[in-house]
Length: 303
Ligand code: GLN
Image 1 (cartoon, rainbow, N blue to C red):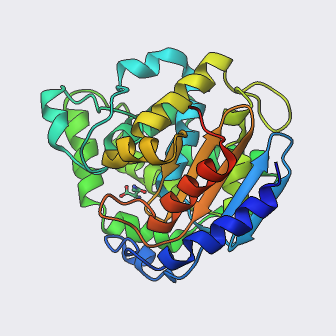
Image 2 (image 1 turned 90 degrees about the horizontal axis):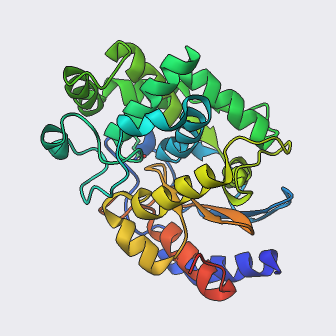
């Protein structure tokens, strides 16, 4: 597969969509991003990376990091995680509170904010420092020791974090949060504020295309656990647009409000696309279109 040629073709095809949509504004530090950016990278199973546009430019990974905390929490703590968080699409916005009351403080899935807060809480209990554990893992998988938190974004998240605080306190009232809520929120905000490029994210997600094997060949997850995370990404990774994403793209994917989306072709490669303009559901407009073009041009999808 000539990934480089495919990427150039995609960049040409989606150029009219770059700049459409709006960068996330509810976190002021994210609203400053240049909406005309577009980058895309493919990493093959051996870690060779192909890219186009702004593929090496760091951006705020945001909710994409929820995939990595889930993998670490499962690897360290095993299946008991699923007593605390479900695996069903929510059909609601990523930061919604409404289902929690009916479901006794157990969030629908690990990729909406409520679910990610529970996963970070578990990782915090298992490791004592969830956000540092995550950053270290990402540095190892990317081979990029410069990966770092963006303190301005983390502080902006915290200053505008009432909704995440409400979610965490509400779940704590059901006994589904073990750590003290302000500490948990700090780790969650830092986790969202990691700056990574498309190349970094495609490399970091490779264990999901390699059936659980890390960059150094050691095993992070069983083959079955890697399959399970890919399945939850397919059904829940793009919030209340997961059905449409599966229909258009046909791959497990995880988006973030920074405008990035990671997608996995199990057994073949990983992809990451970035363009900050978001649709009404919080997914990158040009990003979804680019992944749609990728599976159409290459025929590589899980279907
Ligand atoms: N930091 C964001 C939040 O919790 C992450 C949301 C996202 O990327 N969907 O609001």
